[in-house]
Image (cartoon, rainbow, N blue to C red; front, side):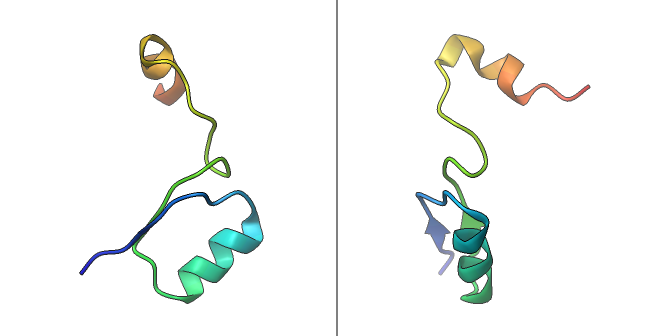
Length: 46
């Protein structure tokens, strides 16, 4: 089973979840939600 943790907001959250072996993380730590029309700009790589 793969585990996704939602709601990661701090480095401490990320560190602890990685220590617990969580497979994937998401939350405000990585970025705030954006409207769909702004998504391409939010993930653009320069």
